Amino acid sequence: MFGSRSARRRVFRTQRPPSVVVTDSPYKFIPPHQGDRWPRVLNVLTPHVLRTRYGVTRVEVRGEDTLCSLQRAGHSILLAPNHCRMADPVVLLQMGRRIRQPLFIMASSHLFRGNRVMSFTMRRVGAFSVYREGVDRQAVQTAIEILSRGRRPLVIFPEGILSQANDHLCALMDGVAFIARSAQRRIEAAPDPDRPDRRTMIVPVGIKYLYQGDVHATACPILADIEERLLWGAQKQRPLMERVERVGSALLSLKEIEYLGRPQTGSLQQRQDRLIDGILRPLEREWLTEPAADDIFGRVRALRRAIIPDMIEGSLPPEEISRRWKQLSDIELAQAVSAFPPDYVKSRPSVDRILETVERFAENLTGREQTHRPLHAIVRIGEPIPVEARRPRRADSDPLLTAISDQLRTMLHELAQESRIYQPAATAVPSDGRSRTQTVGSR
Image 1 (spheres, helix red, strand yellow):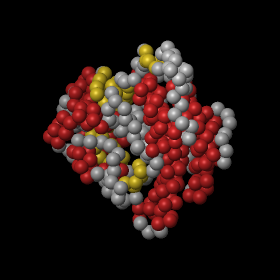
Image 2 (cartoon, helix red, strand yellow):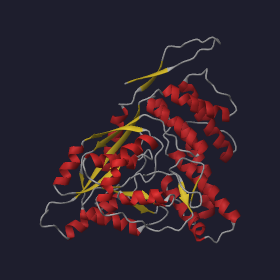
Image 3 (cartoon, one colour):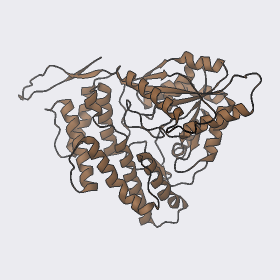
């Protein structure tokens, strides 16, 4: 169903996680299938897809009565979930199946260009494309039309990227607020006499994944492979938490040497910020005529918009194409670094954060998505946020985005408390005399 397994001739993946896919093929808007029969037929497959492709063996939906009440009242519903795994859209489709309601989903355009079967399936379950390298007016107008009609809930991931940490929310993009307000203006301009109180409602949705397996048995082989790549040899004698910290520091130091000339000092946040600037500033000097945005996502967007268009036209020599692919790879590295919060594991050493972190290490080394089963997905439906047609003029920040962000952060914080805390078990001494520590988890 949804995924990032793509054809080599059309979609190219840099050596980064699956969220970082760019394409040099011309973009063509893919509209959603409007019928209900295909979604209902294909959604029968979602449990199988979740289990076999993403390792999700259980989906728990909390607060589904909220959505059912909004539907009965005839409101237009915009679902705004966090986005931390490639499984998220399929998890939401399973939620829709539970409430017997197909969804429309705005999805990155690269997903439609990698595989014909996947493109066919995505469109028929209600997905439509959005081109993130520029202003995609067709996608925006399609989203506004869907929302103003209110026939099905519309899903838009407001972070705009796949984050690196389930318990952490990235900055929200302003497109979700623009689409919601535009739809509300249409509703007010042409009121429905049968539904005079209908309005646009944004519903934040928190998605949390809980690993149900043995984190020690799962994480240690991954770490051993990375340690072998670092020429250390597998550090099996060390505690798991120490291995995670050492590998993370080593990988960051290698990137600092590559881009800054030597390992850096200071806090982890300071080191991340210096690495991001060391990657992006030379590119901004080459490609941008105006100062870049202050936030990392604005900087990345500006650079991609400057670099990619000529690649799509196909007039560049092969060596220039290769050079630009390397630059895009660097840009995506900077974005990945920014999306991973410092001290993520130390601040709450849960089984899920440990596994997430180890998976991200491996993904950044291999470019392949890491999935380990069994995962229990929790979908928590937030409180509806009524949308006003106009943004308050004197507000320093967008109150609608603030309301979405506040709810999502609160839900993710509360859901994080359900993760098992990593606890080393009693230390055993094997025949070689070296202490070995196994792990257990507790609430």
